[in-house]
Image (cartoon, rainbow, N blue to C red; front, side):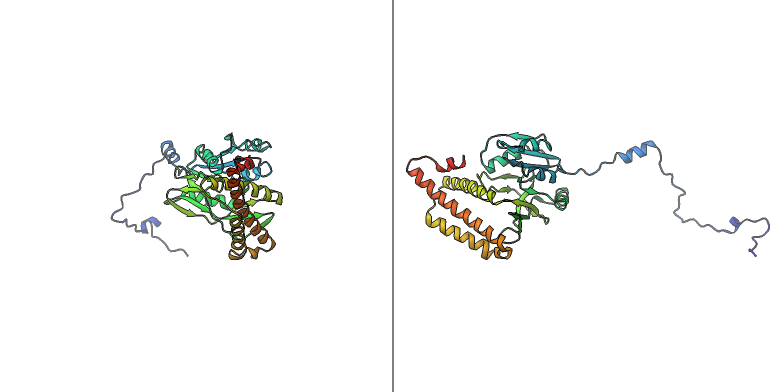
Length: 308
């Protein structure tokens, strides 16, 4: 049987409610359209804008994959040096900032592209490089909360003739590619240009994928082009070559890549890469020697003819 509350009483009569001494009574919560509008109007954090800059020439066979990997960027800038394939048309599918101009060398051309960038941060890519989903997220996180960093190096994983290399100087191969606009420029080198940053440089962890020289024909073409440009640049700076220097530097490059940096651990691909490195050094110093001989003989600049 339920206990009785007594005649004429109710359950509430038997409850004793003690208020806290500081209790001021119920508080009215503001409601209405004005309050809701104020909540909507609260500012949200603004993500820094990112510009991607590339230079191209006859890259139709691989530029689409590169551009698709950076479609998340706020702006893509392409400076082309007179492609006669479908490169420019493909680039214009992704951006209206495609500019066709002459060829002054790698460093000056990349500075042209940089001057057209409008983002808070700039990511410099080559046509044979790809940004993975994981790297994209790390880039966005780094630019959103950079601390005192004005630039970042990115480890690069190289695919050489269809084989991924992990030794021989190819990994981690950290390259400075991401930087705050206005805090860095490219060196004016004709080839093997560098990013010169003014401030603290951090390092990302996720690799940039580098599909370098997918076939041997491209290996030979790139060797010839790069060694000619490098010879011209070093010759203008007063460096000279000889047959002895060519052989010595070629041998040193091979030993450094294959032995001291562990290229032999990559098997046949490591040997191929070491030979390629040796040929690059050998041809560069040989071309320096030939430049001096031809200039002395008054037959004009061989380097300029070879690069034309």
